[in-house]
Length: 134
Image (tube, rainbow, N blue to C red):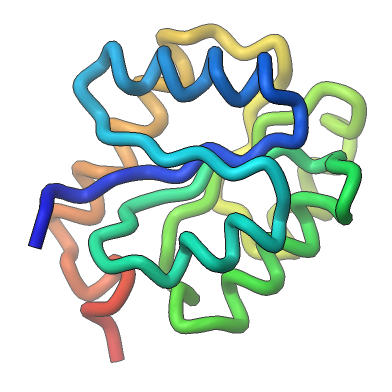
């Protein structure tokens, strides 16, 4: 078993690269997905600790991805939505299953702090992480 990793999902390769690099520079292992379908395939990998996703993507949206993740074996996986165009939909995103909504442009420090906090909670409460719960 490897160390936990996160998944960054965005159909914009530049945004995906920036978020992934910010998290990698903070010492967090990251995989990337360019679509909700690709993200769902990767979400089934062992040791996935969290997902960061956009709301608006060309193959669907991050809200659909949140619902799909919650309905799958990753039901307790922490999900962070980072969005600009639909930031006013924070309540909708929470209802779809996301845990945290951050506004684009997102400060790298805020993104890293949010992820580290989620990882600390998961470490303190392992039953709340992917694959360890009921």
